[in-house]
Image (cartoon, rainbow, N blue to C red; front, side):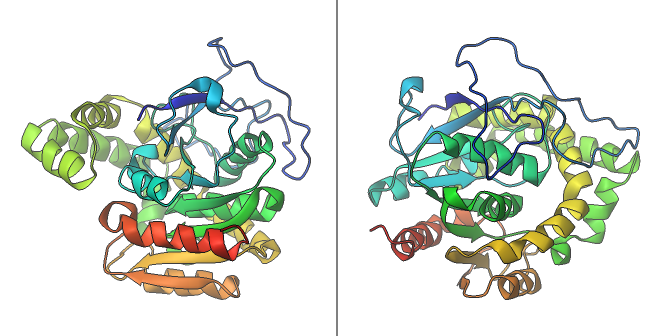
Length: 327
C-alpha cells in the first residue's frame, strides 16, 4: 500500500464545531510552514499557530487505495498514531480491518512520517483531523494509540459530529501519564540534547541490517523499503524536533483535555497492555473513571499493542462499530 496525499488547512482560530474551513488546493504548490522548533528553551505552548497550514496529511487506506482522487470516498475508521511514529504503526492492523469489511485510513500526523512541516499540540492535531472529516458526511470510529488517544479525545470533545465511537489503544493520556522523564525531556537545552542524541543513536543502530530486519521487518511488519525510510527519518530527519514540540505541550494539553473530557458521550473502548510501562494500569484506571461507561480490554502486551496484538485492536474496533449503531 502506498501513502496517498491529502492536504488539510487549519485556519486561524479554527472552530471545531463550525464548518467554515476554506478549501485548499490539491496540487503540489508550496505551503506555509509553521516555525521550526528551537532548542534554546523557547516555550512553544499555546493555540494553533496563526494561519497554520497543516502540511500534507498523508494516509494509507486499508483497501489498498493509492489514487489521490479516491480520498473523498467515505471511510468508517480513522487511525491516529502516537509519539513519535507514523501510519506504519498500523501495518499489521490494516489488513485485519479490511478482512472485517471496514474501510480505514491511517494518517501521518503533522511533523511525522511523510508529512512535512512542524509538529503541533494535540488540539491542533484534532483540528487537522476534523477538517479531514469535514469532507465526508458520515462520522467515523476514531482509533488513537498512545498520545494519539489524547488527540482522539480532543476530537470527540470538540467535534462530536465526526465521531461515532473511540477506541483508545494504550492511552498515554492525562496528568497521571506524565512522568519525571517526560518533564526532563521537555526541559530547555537538556531535553532537546537528550532527544537528539537518543534518536541519532537509535537510527545509527538500526542501520545494521540484522537489527533493522529483526525490529522493523519481522516485528513491525514493514517492507525492506519502508524500514530503510523509517531509519532515514529517525537518523537524519526532523522527527526528533517533532518529539520536542509535543513534549513541551504535554502538561498544558493534559490540563485542557481534563476539562473537556466530560463533554464526550460516544461509546469508548480502551485496549490496554498488562506489561505497559507508559500507559500503566494506574493511567488507564484514572482515564476510565473520567469516561463513565468506557469498556476496558486487557492484553498481555506492552505499549506497542498495534504491533504485538493487532487482533485485540481489530476486535475492539469492530465492537465499537457495532456499539455505535452500524453493523
